[in-house]
Length: 609
Image 1 (tube, helix red, strand yellow):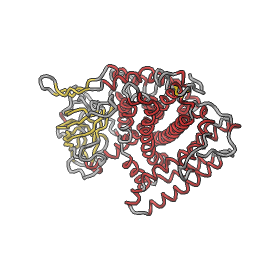
Image 2 (tube, helix red, strand yellow):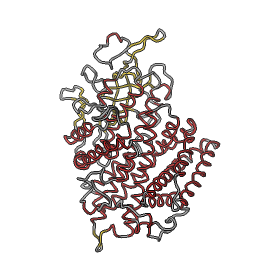
Image 3 (tube, one colour):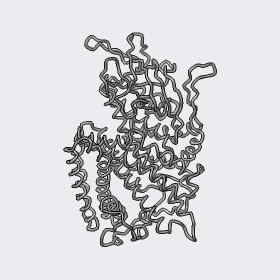
Image 4 (spheres, one colour):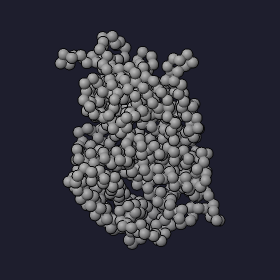
């Protein structure tokens, strides 16, 4: 275990280290996720996983980036294969994470426990995995997402065998998940989907050997079947060869738009062992995330099994979309964490003009700002994750639903954009090496670019924030959330900061009231500003509450972090010219190296930037 303050000159790179040990901020947030008597178990698992990712998966990921999956569509006789071939390091990485229980522990009791640990534990491990391989996180998170969707919506229990395999720790039997949503003509307009689903009208021919085979019931005199033949095209299909794929399609006479879509389980292989009738047309030549194969799929009489009730597919799929947005967000935080680590190591070891570049005021300022960004995004992402987890534990919890609906798209938008910005500057800190494929910042920069695109771009997410407030009054739970955090603040140093946040929160509430009365075009025009405003106010309130807890224990480090975030995001009317180097130079060790800061060393007033 590495104890703060962390001296980064002891490392050559941000690899062959334990990512859990080197992230005290994540450790603190994770400690809040478990009852006191359970954290010991969780910490041991997380520390073990941080070691695996830092010492094995990180190196494998670099090799996989140069030797990504390839598609063999047909054999030499022209027979359809749909076979994706993987580098051996990819298979080792998959084995390591699934045998560790990154998915299974959320759905089945792990060894030594009587019940599953829930989604927050999986998300914490996903954050650590994102230090090494965003593509692998994509495949793993979709596996968990399909498992969650089937658990919630497979009311017939037709697919318990699939769910069991999705949540397996046996690498020989585990299957992965995927979701095929995007069609070329629709993109984010899911309701424009043109894939058709024709029912198989002879359910008596289905064997009884598999629960996932066609099942028929008599409903109002009309025979319904769970087996359908799908026809259409899916344009962006990540984890293309997954055995547990979910896809949306429209049954005969179903209405247009999202209201007419049903959800289908589309396996790579049928229960008989035969290849499903679909064609993997090609793999995309992507900028990054090489480890997850993304391609185009043609359905032509492809077997799909109806999940849940007909014409409720889009509603069911929102379970997975919300999950994927959260995993995108914590994944972005993981990339930011790795980039920050690489930057700290470089700055500690790179000498210029007779001293380490971390000793120059400008670099200290940069590293402090990057560290504050990392801490802020991590705090907000885990808050959004907490409310999603709480809602998934109790679908009757209205507050959890409202906050999940509001905070998840906010988190996904802000954290993923911040990952792209951080990746760009982290390359700059490395100098010319950062631009070269031999160094990991090159890959992290390419991988980060997809995060704002996956599961909704900034515009789509901001419009979803408006939709959540308009249709579900999601902002109703925001007042008690922010007020509750600010009510915890008592320390004199934090009071002026809390007053600033309270004033901004009141302005935010006025803005939200204004949105309710303005025309649609004006509301849409303001959507991004409102989304980012929510992030700033909520994050500031949480950081101040955390700072109060730390000050109660005599540690002022978090107070400085909260101070810098509030001053930068909420208090400054104009960027001006900053000449006071005190925040960066005086508190560099505390913020960047996670050293404790005695509360007697706080200035009389909050620092300004």
